Image 1: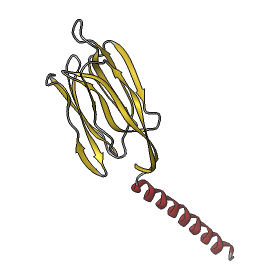
Image 2 (image 1 turned 135 degrees about the vertical axis):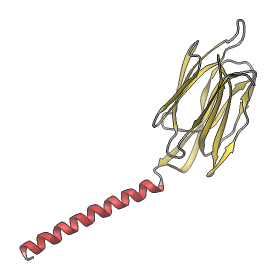
Image 3 (image 1 turned 90 degrees about the horizontal axis):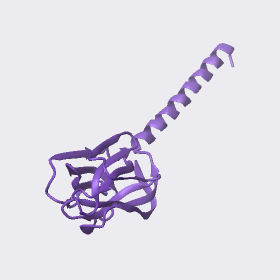
Image 4 (image 1 turned 60 degrees about the vertical axis):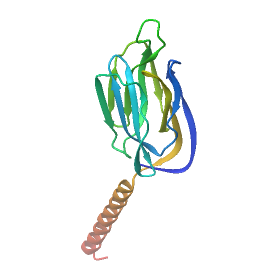
Length: 188
């Protein structure tokens, strides 16, 4: 997959609580990997973006807790996230809501859920856009999550283009061979 043409950037509304401090990774050319540390909630998240063909690791957002780590490696550039869902509510009595679980759906598979599916559920669909940046709020935990999206024209990779050309050549050659065989048999 390649991104061509002008890129209009939109924001997908944040889900979660209003605790912690605001963060924004900025905008890149795609997402390669997501590292999530979790237990009873999402303790932290770190994204490895594609920056014009090279990996770029953004800062970690969240705290230092969590007993489980999930490293989600996307098959970049063919695989991309089409929806993110999860849950949010306070993890401690009287606290502010935090992200309790996250599930990532790509164009080829579903990854997760990570964390505890408890509290208010949410789903953010990309509607054909590409995630080019994560944003949110964090402190001891991941308090909220949102995305920068690109309404870009998505075309297939060079390999797919070459494959399509080979199919056309094969079909043309098969047709030419059949026409030649008919001419030999009929004498025309």
